[in-house]
Length: 135
Image (tube, rainbow, N blue to C red; front, top):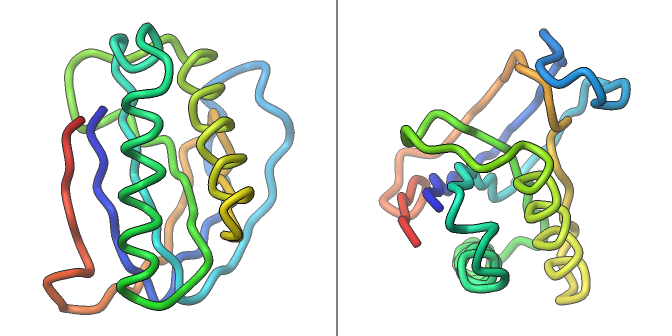
């Protein structure tokens, strides 16, 4: 798994292009003061249940605590590596991570899965505003 975490003062999206036929209809959304995890799920991440998912959740919670916020957005971003997990398995991993964050008291949401999105991002120029991790 490869993840770019961003602290964003603003992270808005509008669905632009559907990429998975079975994805449900999607709507625009506006968000303020959030941690956004741009997540690239690789084949090994879905084969070994738990390890990468746990690290994703722990790192998201760590960064949210650093910024003293409770909102985390999981964004499927399959552009950080060559190998990609099966789309359905990757979506299930993100769903499990979202539920774990919610159980820990975070407001966790996902961007519409299976879409390219028009993004409107405003991020601080700060060392903890952008962090890259490989698990």
